[in-house]
Length: 117
Image (cartoon, rainbow, N blue to C red; front, side, top):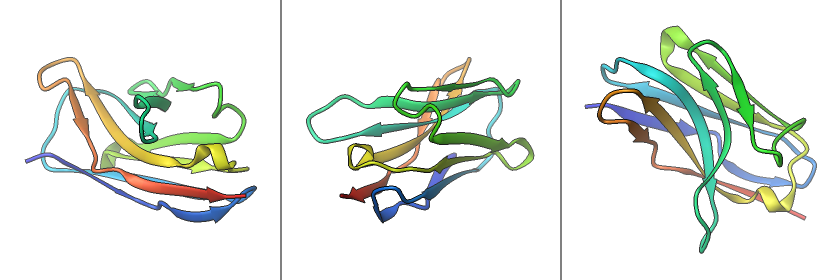
């Protein structure tokens, strides 16, 4: 049974920092990429940052220059360092594993990030 276990969310003041962690438990193969998404009530889930097996990173425009995604391949763990947080970063953040074979995606349970002004 594959599970994605997230941690690191919480309440922080604007301008502060948080570091999210996501560890994959269980045997999993054929990971193409890992990433972080976020969702606020009433809106679609949106990508924040992704990192491929080759180390290529991609960021949403809103995250560029403030967030950094990193990965420890041997541990199937992905991190999201978030700096200079803004109230508009408030959301539930989800960890994602993307594969080229079915099942194509795994999701974590989500971790709440709240940024106060």
